[in-house]
Image 1 (cartoon, rainbow, N blue to C red):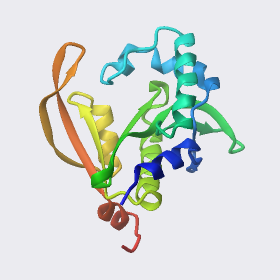
Image 2 (image 1 turned 90 degrees about the vertical axis):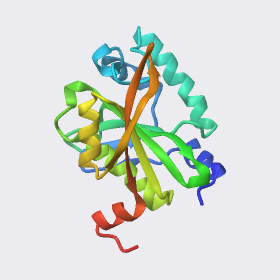
Image 3 (image 1 turned 90 degrees about the horizontal axis):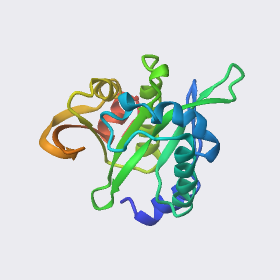
Image 4 (image 1 turned 60 degrees about the vertical axis):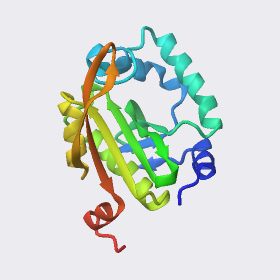
Length: 201
């Protein structure tokens, strides 16, 4: 069973995760410039629970704040970094990680955002699949869910491509900027993920 102290220990020094094209590592204040490019866009935050960043200084202050949350083991997001032609860290194009953990039920919720300039290339799906692998193989979770505001078709497609199953709609489940919004819920279970990826369970 997943323990809170385990999560605190793991995310006080988040492991670096890699894919063919990406590196997922701890966010750093030096990522402020790359993050501001998408975090300042209202078309990006339209379906997110946080507001567009008003300045690069605001973004940098946020990333400094995040460093303390990492130290406490209370922040579960990775920066999504493109590898350059030599396989080294290049541009930071978004984030992917866990928004919360449900310790009694051994489950978590995943979230992600990618700079629109890098969409439609499979990067979000690649990052999500790597985090799912970590969730099921390393953290031994039983379930990972993802939620999206109805209308956010881009996010829903990433869920579909990553093996999530649609469970239903939580009607008026989120008060979002003064308006009640319907929220779709998708999930993937450990057994489903291992069968899809050819592992024996």
